[in-house]
Image 1: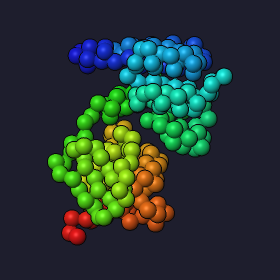
Image 2: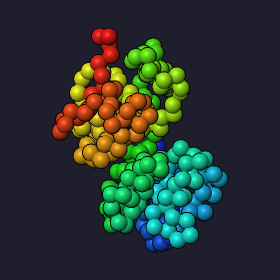
Image 3: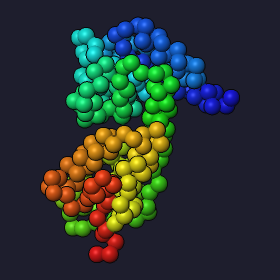
Image 4: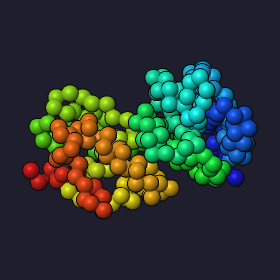
Length: 239
């Protein structure tokens, strides 16, 4: 009984050009105790993001005038709130594009209300979860140093920006340097137990991290893959 009451302060923005979908999704979220705000186009969504400061946005891809991808790009210019994309196609390129632009998750239409609510809960949980941090700076080698206390990553003398999910993934890899972490373990620790079978998420974010910290992402020396098993960060503790 206490869980819905705890959620009453959380506002979810639902954006879809079909009012019936906004209404149906909103009703299911309200039954879970969330407050819901609706928008029928990207321009209205941007206004509500800046004026109402929702805690999460559910954003349809296929909208007239300004589609979900463009709306997401503009949201990311002003906000870091979790965004879940809704896509009819369910095609790989759409999913990858959404994640590349900064979406936190995607759900393919038609979807079950239970699945969407579960994804909303997981995204909000990740956004609120502070990552435990070592108290000392880690110098991997002359090219890479990481200070988890200050959330600072230096690559070849320059500070790089990591998105929250990239940061959590790097934290778990570095904290277990030299050990192989399975796909399921990383998905569970970084995204939540609901995502233990979503290998695509892990592959994409490993790719993003390699682009940012590796000198040659195609031939990585920090984040190493173990085919069919998982990933490990190079063992730097015995250098």
